[in-house]
Length: 244
Image (cartoon, rainbow, N blue to C red):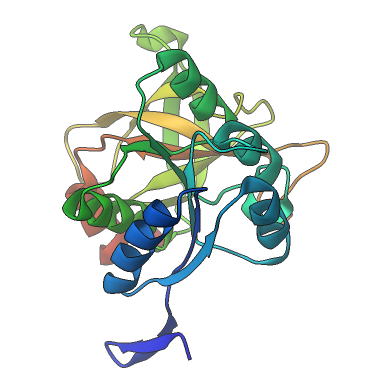
């Protein structure tokens, strides 16, 4: 069970965990996700949810910010220490607009916030964007990339990609930037006149000393932020011209 046919290929439904101490919110969000055809698990507290995440691989986690016993911030901090949850997107539900707590949540690894109660169309759109990018094809293409944190290009550092997708790239470097660090990126696609300049965020790092993924060289995975040239990059990756 929990499988469906997509274009003749057997695929698994995306599995999403919802954590909220409110039975109403668990039912509301859970029913929306089931309507979208996701495989859904619901838990009413952060402590039990940690145990579930430690033993089960989820494609996404949706958690409330304010919960008794263990709030959403502590839950996020805890699950980010689990090897199977280092890169899983975490969406946080909140009815408040406390910028200090929002900043803290993003530092801990929350991908985005959704106001309570979530609107069905908004939730569906966010899930489609995040999950489709995570499942997009990663191509082993090697392109030179300039990256830095300011407008002065001469201050940028040059590196090479290990792979790319429409959602981001993995950049080889012995000195990866800190997790969640924002940066600017510039690279050129073959046979394109204008270079691509965009913003990114460090989604994960592979330490030269103790790598978390030995299939990758030392470096950092960079997620594109508000990437306008997605269609252009997708066309390049699908063309196969990168093999040359």
